[in-house]
Image (cartoon, rainbow, N blue to C red):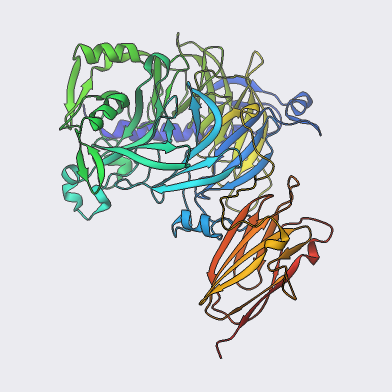
Length: 629
């Protein structure tokens, strides 16, 4: 099953030629065509009305888009496509003081950046429930959880034995587990091992995480030592396929250098099909190996629920249909979308209809599992598929720069629309749930080129809003995104119930809700400040001559516990110490702590960094540090 290199390179060259034609042929603003499609997209004044959300009205959907190497989450409204909020998750953020206050600084664990690839909304019965959002960090092998009541990060966990959980942190239908396969194979514990022993000493570990809702903490339930391949995207089964998961792979050649060539030799890679309920039972029955404190399943030793399905070379997305009957995958170097049947896969497993094995894992017979191959004419580089509420699938075409609409039950291609340019992922309204909503699709494009005013050699990436309600798909809005959104999910706005003010927490020993309770307490060389922020002043010690001043000695360990006692929605206060590189944001009713050593003697003004009232400029005081001598 080896493929000659020449055809592969020829295919890539052909794809690049087509892409160049497309780039040259599309001019934003009027009619657009591609060499791969006869579809025409026309913009009109009516399109502006579709995306206009007038004063007093709000968007129908939240679009949760990963911020890539910014480490942040971008929150947009749909259909307006307005950026509503940037939520810091894996990287510090000076605008909110995230990574500066004691709690978030501890959560970040000393890391200064993250590569956030895939958001995943919590689910109940296979539908988004609007409660939490999970995230993965490729750069530092972390996972995080964000509370959608406050749009703040609650926990970050370092995932051992894995390097680069690039795959979507996909959740099971009732958020029983998050599964994090890894992009880069490494030895367990990332210990040193020669690449000459790659096939023997390296693994692509998949981690199963659970989420403790009461304490808002992530935990590692178990891990699976998969073969030393690269694991890309994933999805969970639903309805009739509940209990199963699917993951795409590449570099099943186990190449260790010049990946572009050496990882493209075989005809096919694989989809990993696994039964997570059986794996959980294996762990419960003690069928695992303890590896540095982690419960590790080795498939070649104990395999009760892991199988391989051959798929076209270098697949990216794998997506389960809303009815849970099929999963769709496409090789980046192949022009076809392949529909696989869960029912056929289950029968093949029962009948032991295998074509061989890899690393002790049975390989299902491709023809026994494949339902159909769909080949849209001249469509190149299928990557990712979303669904609507009418039985249609929408697949991004990276090389031919378009979205293809097709019926996944019949294979009929019904529409195509060009986008600008090179779409990676797409997000339809509730488009990867058991109950898609239809109406809208957002194409997440890797390139912008001529869409916006020039800002030099580097351009922002683009997101394009596509109207799905008419007889033809229509691109009706284009907005910049910087940096590249790697993945997104779109949820109905009425599913998310935020709070306006943090409730008083009587159990928080650091919180102060009355001015008369403010105080500064010294214990040796540790100074605890229990202060409040309110329009338009700080109070650190109500009994002091100057209640808005903090005075300490050089070398003191200082902890400033600040509570925003304003109970009015949106009255956020900031707190910064001039020339001390310290800043944090405190929302209404919230308490946060700055924890630092006063290592510089002198006089340092402190002030509110968030505009809060007409007397915001007057909301300041002094941080005085007496020198040691």
